[in-house]
Length: 169
Ligand SMILES: [Zn+2]
Image (cartoon, rainbow, N blue to C red; front, side, top):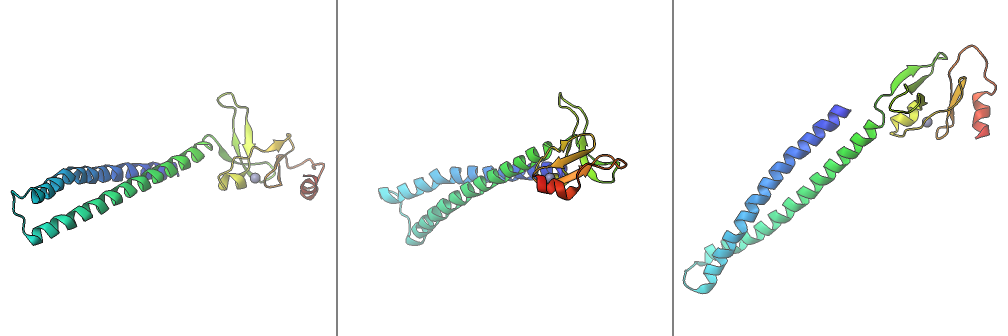
């Protein structure tokens, strides 16, 4: 996923270079077109009807292309922002590994790291892009958003069943 996001960002950066090149061309074309129009007005240069029509049409196309270029730039910027946000979301799960509890359930675990104590997060919430730290004790941990409990030990019976946990919250 991280690699996919990096590739997405790279493509967006490359596309932005082309958009900027297109923008530079349009900027360079604008004064040329203005001069052509000015010549038409001062009477010193004779411009025939088809050429005049062509200059007017070109001016309109140039304006439309400039607008499209700006819109493309803003779409690309939004795409880049979205990819960066996705990357940020993914980064929150770095260091977590899927772990099978002795009771046979799967949760994500992170060892003590960067001053944070070791803890578990809910797999369902993680898949939904949410980081829900499981709360509980050495026997059982619980995800509050999902209302789901996970047993950390297989042998000793837990005090309350899963359904009574659900009632309790
Ligand atoms: Zn959850």
